[in-house]
Image (cartoon, rainbow, N blue to C red; front, side):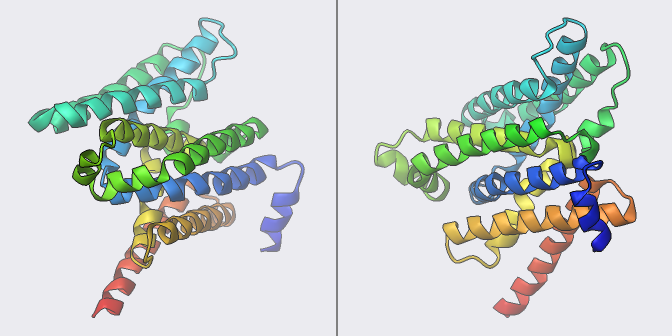
Length: 280
């Protein structure tokens, strides 16, 4: 424990400190948006968005290196593609009917393929594994400001539209009868989900970020008695998984993203057993 505390305060090892701070900040949005995703049952849409983001990351790398657009970072590309994917998937889920799964699968695979092609055509060496599975060594001070800014945007929008989003998740038909524009709310929820997914790509990666979005909320749903309580508990569980995962990966010299997800998975399986015992 003392070694970990020493590493967190070591000025020569800022990445561990930055990674923990970014993870704790992102846990707030993950707990809140993850609750909506689990209750609304749109984790498959969130998974498609997360995989499409590789196209934005690859495009950002290509434009920076080849086109010389230094201000357009991979994270800018990730945000643009994430929001664009949310808009497309919102339309698909409303109008595609029986072809919905096929279209989502095409976007899922197409986004990753396009991103990898951009990375392959970018001069120099770029390891796609760091984006797919996360790499705490990539965390910088700028990422802290970036995540904090997205946190503020997400929390502000959720606070404004909280009651309507709640109505959308629990009774969409009743909301429509009351004159609520559920189609726009559905799009708003997917856009918030897209922004939330971008928050932790650097730590847990594109492939595993969907697990950290849904598992803490699923754990919280086994014990919470209200949506607000579920959000608070999901935020705490997400922060705990990230803290324990970073600590364990430091001592065991393992990839932090994989360790974080394994801890979240273990906690979820444990919560299933505890909830069954309490109900029996």
